[in-house]
Amino acid sequence: MSLIHWSLILWITMMLFIHNLDNVEGRYHYHKGQKKNSPAPNPPAESPTPPEDPPSPPSNSPSVPSDPYPNDPPGDSPSGCIFDVRSFGAVGDGSADDTDAFVAAWKEACAVESGVVLVPEDYCFKITSTIFTGPCKPGLVFQVDGTLMAPDGPECWPKEDSHSQWLVFYRLDQMTLTGKGTIEGNGEQWWDLPCKPHRGPDGKTVSGPCDSPTMIRFFMSSNLVLSGVKIQNSPMFHVKFDGCQGVLIDKLSISSPKLSPNTDGIHLGNTRGVGIYNSMISNGDDCISIGPGCSDVDIEGVTCAPTHGISIGSLGVHNSQACVSNLTVRNTIIKESDNGLRIKTWQGGTGSVTGLRFENIQMENVRNCIIIDQYYCMSKECLNQTSAVHVNDVTYRNIKGTYDVRTPPIHFACSDTVACTNITLSEIELLPYEGELLDDPFCWNAYGTQETMTIPPLDCLREGEPDTVVELSAYDCRS
Image (cartoon, rainbow, N blue to C red; front, side):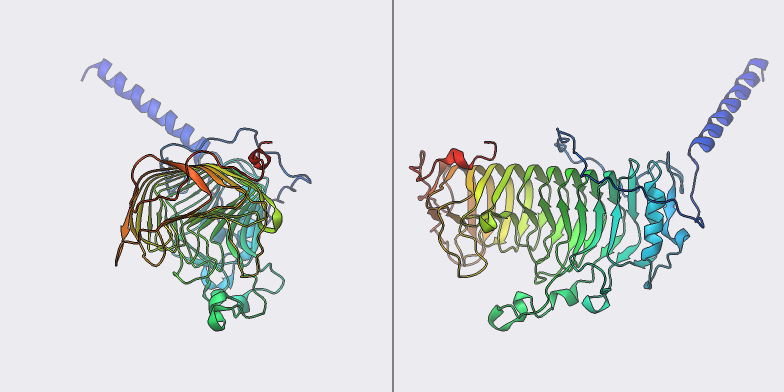
């Protein structure tokens, strides 16, 4: 072999050796438990000011892997550390209270960039109601590969803990909740409290304490990712976002029984810049619910089966102002559900719902496939009121499938004084799942356009502009 050939081999070997040294020095850092925990940074006295322009949700769902660092050798993270909760004393036998270990691991991970709180597989960790507080260094990952479990019902819930929430993530930026494991809410005993509607005689509520915890709550946070994990059997709402901005939800699984009360899958309130993609939701209430103060929400590739459908509202309760704008739902399946695409508002509210697009939705055995209800009321004692949330600029396009014939598949019940305006219908084909065609869709004070013939025929939608009793511009949220 020539001297040049040997020299080339020696040179390549030296380069690989130096490169590996750089990798080891810069990346391989696995955290073991420490006796002392770094103190968590104190949250600011004032609420953080979110960026003025929220990130636009992606048009195509990104790939969000279960492993936040899929190209690294096991135990590596690029610039931070992995904080295995077992290193902080967590037992993981499903019986011991591991709350303190989780809090300690969170504090350590919060203090470093790209820190990972690891909930390892093959273990079941029980923790009580906990607030995981920021601000933290960017890139924090809460990775659930095992099982994370709530206490088993009200009797096991510590008396000093909040009964309104279980896991809270507060004042965070650039945080990810991911993994291949399960977050278990143990909600069955909460569903059976005597105060729940289905427990009383004739479906009436029995008096008594009724607070039930939301399972996972993100509060006053931004640039969040929620992906991969299986979330099940929440006592009440499964996942709730309050006052957040820049949220990506992808490849999520949410499940609870069909008759579990108030177990909304994903609820948004005062939150903007949201993408919800490629997720499976089955539960006893709304699949996805959009509350007041939400805008720029993109939903695609979601299957709701069974649920109460995708709901905007309820809005305007107690004569409040409610503003929802720029919502798109596409390429979604709704099966065996009480409602399909629903807008529900209370009489007496103000504000507007505007810029809604529902496209390419497949229905299967759904009651109230398309419904606007501006007379929403939780009792029979609601009085007629003049004011209402203005519903405007709503498009339903390529909505097809089957409906439950107990109610008409299309129902537009709009306010007497604040009409629904600019409703567009195109390629609506809804046939009975069983029984005879129910061809009497309902409209009241609803104005818009049919671009194509609708099945069943819709003759009650009015053309043009309404002669309203009030000036509609007064309900514009931008004014």
